[in-house]
Image (cartoon, rainbow, N blue to C red):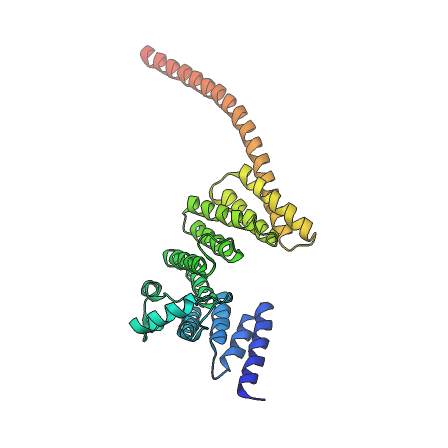
Length: 305
């Protein structure tokens, strides 16, 4: 078996362990590959991300991006439809101006400025780095990379193209905004993602995921249980129709139960508050009268004295 075939076999094994959630095992297998392809670096980046080892994840994803970026000069002269390839033109122009770009030594901000060549794999590298920065709590960097990915998608598919990739990036950008406290921006991103998904027949579950994210945003952050419940019930209906045993159903049911419990507690609290308010007024009056009587008596005794 050739070294290339051995590497491919190990990569497949690592992918299986990654899907099983055994990320350390996946990393251990991938690191044994001597001549790492761009896809091996990408897989390492994904596994390190899940292990919350963000520096290693960033390093491998940047290496993936570097390798894919360099290969763009070798793309075909024409696209799928036989038209002159925009990628080829961009690659040639870029080669003339800066053919020695080293993405690994640039800061995240500088890296965004120099990346002009576009491909689906470059977009995948950008959004993966965005995910790393978001989980690393580097929210502004993450937002910049998500937006750059959206620009890439527009270049690949056309401005405003309705594609599932754009919906996914908008959903993740919404989560990033939610985590950074920019709630209105998060709502806008989620709604944009929903608008895309609803135009694509195959995105039923993506609609449910986005509705659930909106529910979480309104329940935990915007403190609007009424809206949260509405979004959860829409998501629950989709999950149930898709698969009555869907793994996200129980989570939504727990959240709906929490909302119901909070509503009952609030209702009981409001009732208690009304009763307590009345009682408190009565007790205050009694205490005040009692205190006045005591004060008067004491004063009177003092005067008599």
